[in-house]
Picture 1 (tube, rainbow, N blue to C red):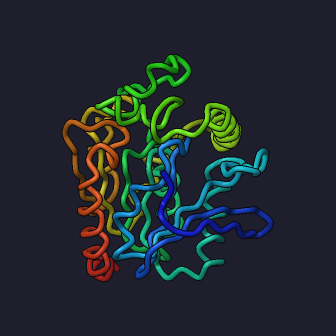
Picture 2: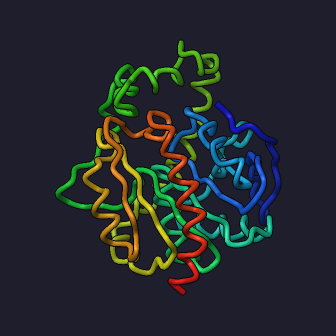
Amino acid sequence: MTLTGTLTTISVRGVDVSFYEAGSGPAVLYLHGAATLEGFSFLDALTDDFQVIAPFHPGYAPGQEGRGLLGAQDLTVHYMDFIETLQLDRPHLIGFSMGGWLAAELAVFYGGRLGGVALIAPAGLRTDNIPCTDLGAIAPVDLPSYLAHDASIAARYFPGGDAAPAESVFEADRAREAAAQALIEAPVGMGHPNMGRWLHRIKNPVKVYWGAEDRMVSSAYLHRWAAAIPHADQQMIEKAGHLVMFERPGMMDDVVDFFWRSGVKAEQLK
């Protein structure tokens, strides 16, 4: 489940940050979603070409209970400080689900210090005529079918699955993450109501990926994101759900290619 590499914890302006690091080359920073039950192993596909850095959001890592940050803007500043603490030079950025919302805000306000931005099924953009999934209304037994088109792929990460920890650990992890996520959502919920007005400020090369059968965050949002961000490319991936990078791991080859191409494209967009 974990990225093949080292796990390190540092302090960034008084905030503990635990992160995995693997590979070498240009830096890629990964921002995870509202939970980490699926882990970071899909990022191994990048480590032949890039230095991959995958932090836990504050409050998410084991031993960091109650240490979350308040709101996405707090996290945006936190990741600015994180990038500068590690002295990363124009890192590429991957944001998945809630991490896609955070990645988009980071690109809006800090894009000049970033490279290419890959958004995978990003949450956070609100559109009245595209309903959002009410997570509280989903029975736990049904969650795998909301996370993956092939529910057996997501079920691996739930108790009883071959990639899941002991049930007590699983429950403790989810409780800790839920508390940290609640702090992130406290100011305005999941995403900022004005985000659609900000996205035009992103000048970075951007590519948005979505599983066509996503039941967690509707794939109908793909075109909204791509239309709102200048120069953004988009890719709909058939027969895949929210965990598209696990159902269709070959998509990571496209992410690698996008990041290599985005270095040239970034110069053209300046």
